[in-house]
Length: 505
RNA sequence: GCGCCUGUAGCUCAGUGGAAGAGCGACGGCCUUCUAAGCCGUGGGUCGGAGGUUCGAAUCCUCCCAGGCGCACCA
Image (cartoon, rainbow, N blue to C red; front, side, top):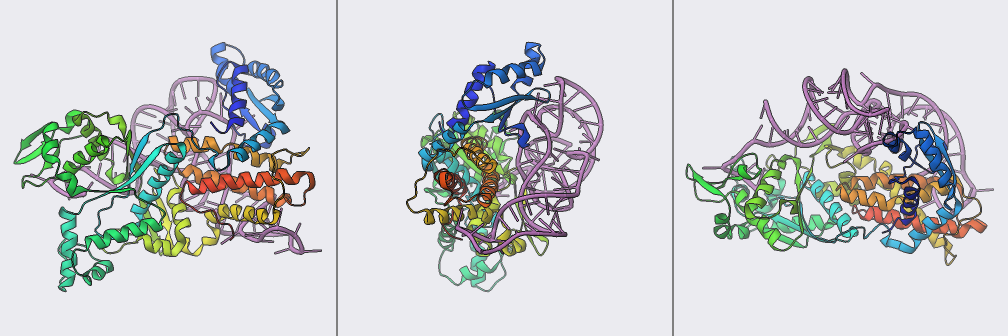
């Protein structure tokens, strides 16, 4: 398990305190390098004053080789100042682990399927689907980095009501007619009308190309119409009944909010019937975990999926539904509507043309998935220079520049006699990376990586501004080591959200 | 009506029990030195409201207010 330098210190302190110690970074420098509130937590149970317990821990902690100084503060915090050796160890571990730093933290390796985007091919990918991809792919990357085996899958329908409307809309355009009611409009319909035959394969190819451009690669594509062919065998396995000519799943008895129609009174299956076949297919294929990435407008399907799993006799714990809130685009200060049918759409390709892949991926994943986000397209296009992604990427570019100038100069982790505050802060920040990765993975919150990356950039730019790396005498090897370690961490943090770390800017 | 999500600096948002934060915007400084896409400083807060739990609450519980999204024999 990487991040040993901090873990080891926590373990040593836990032994001294007789309880688990979690170290925190104090907000104020005068509160030390790290602090713990363990004495405050233990005091009630032990019926002793917290400051007294804290004082005991301070005296014991002073004996640890890593600890330079410890003191009691406030109601019973223990503040710790770490010594030169600890900083050397922490940096050394990063350099030794290299690009694997922070990875392979999974306790049990799983086969995981992440199904994402899955927009029906009725038109180009729009921005809300792009958030699905940016979020889902980042979660997938985190899981892979943790050591899991991950497959990305795209599920789509090429039949059914929506697709018929889409085809009819293209056909109408070919004949110069208005699209049918509830049909699709927009320039892309006119473009498709110029071509012969079924427009669906054309759209699918375009979707895949856009997603590849967006740095999302799908390992497999699942087709709803194929899955529907298995319904004859599957429906008898679940709890159903007939009502008013339709076949209903008794899902309310298995945790869903209500029963659902699976076969319409006209004999055609609903999309929920395909859900059953698809879910069975996923679990039968041997995935330990099947992750669905869905927009918040689909949150009602969460209980449905769990009910389907129960009806089929599978453990619903193997399913995981990740929801993300919607994206609003602002154009000219007003919210742009993004209905494909209305034709007033903002396509991912356009967004990528305007602000680039790096900024788009950053923006779409930088906020919590629980947060509705607003992206001002005009502003994002104008303000690329002030975009935080460039602030972070600039770190990588600056380091690459230093490394080019450094040539074969030795890179090490042995600290000079005196460490500056900027050097201490940067090492501490880098040492947190494994914990950040672990939490982002566990909570399925890749936005934590962008926040962390900004902190790293802050610390690095401050260090770089205040200290020379090359021609710094005894400190040079250590500072080159700091640069390399920062490069390792920033490059990985960016890669986990699908953003590149440039050599030059 | 029911369900999910949200409410923290002027704006966009981090922060899921420990000593209130970042970016942008505003104001004022710093380039004969490894990339100024940078650095330093100033100003800015009833953490939606009210109770409760706790030594300690932006964070947990209850209620209320406001906003978003759902509640199909569409997907």
